[in-house]
Length: 431
Ligand code: ACO
Image 1 (tube, rainbow, N blue to C red):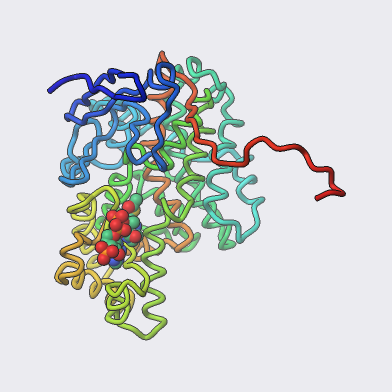
Image 2: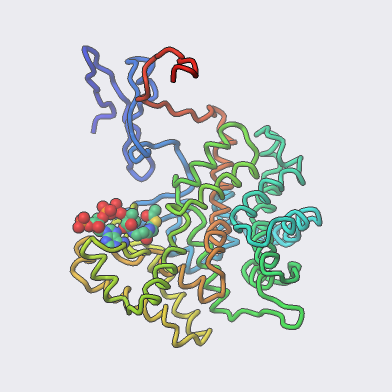
């Protein structure tokens, strides 16, 4: 294969180097295009644009492959856990036992919030959306740790391990405190003896009269949910984190921007949309049959939690989380849940119906993760917050990649202006 492509433009020919990634992904290097021809490329929504090189996550959507740092998601799901995977994603390698113990100690040490941060969370209105509180609080961490948020990448990188541990640990405490405040409940304090997921569930659900102890299956389902969401290469929130980081912004400012992007319903809202759909079907007195027929006719809404832009044949995360979901359900002894019955009907239908089979529309990770969140007792408006907790290691790793790039340039896409041409100002009395 040639390593040069030739572009003919007007009366010019330009040689574009072909750039091949470590898994054989091919790209045209157009970095000299504008300087040499005056043209730019037009790629609405960036669907054909590689915005960076990255060593963190590899996805092959056609083949249903997802790997973090080269390790298949199936192996990590089976043999690792969220904390170890967070170390892998942020540091690039699996930890030794000493490194893992040190990382866990740092997460434990940084779990509590400073009193000022607690008051900050308490100062929001009770009905504030938890994603608004989360992004504001994560950004505010920079004010509490100015030595980690100097907005000088060199200096911030010297303290990277501490900043990463703070963000990964505190995101869960902020989330749980926000939930307790909005429900008028007393706050729980993190327990140093508990693992990451057990501690989160304790922070959320323990009461002064009743300590919440999850079944191992529930803790494991949460662990898997977070692990499966740890990174997903250059999606909207991750690209946002990299964009903000490219301006030299510190880790907390950058990942808090990622939280805001994730809040958008087209990005982090799919698992919530699944539950809303099930509730609507139930409220309509339907068992799913009418809804499916309407979706197939193109006149009704789509089945939320089915199909995926990137994974064309199957979503590898859905396969993994499905088993864990059923185990958690059994351990919680949940029966007679009408929404669950509808969900199972939709799942069965999509797996057997010609319409869904030919269009390769199978349940995606959001379908099962929405159901898991519901089974765990996580309220609907916290679903995207749970996604943010899981995605934190990925955002941090992507921030690091940008900050550590010696050839870093601020991200600055171009545009094709299609507005009004030059015209003269009209005085107000003549408009
Ligand atoms: N339910 C019913 N029909 C669907 C669904 C669905 N969920 N998704 C796609 N289709 C149909 C379309 O109507 C279309 O039918 P046609 O060929 O008869 O016109 C065909 O399948 C292909 O649809 P596209 O829009 O081209 O599929 P695309 O791959 O672009 O869309 C998407 C992917 C946006 C995820 C879509 O499947 C969808 O809207 N799913 C529901 C929302 C959801 O669960 N999103 C979570 C995924 S997160 C993510 O992808 C980033």
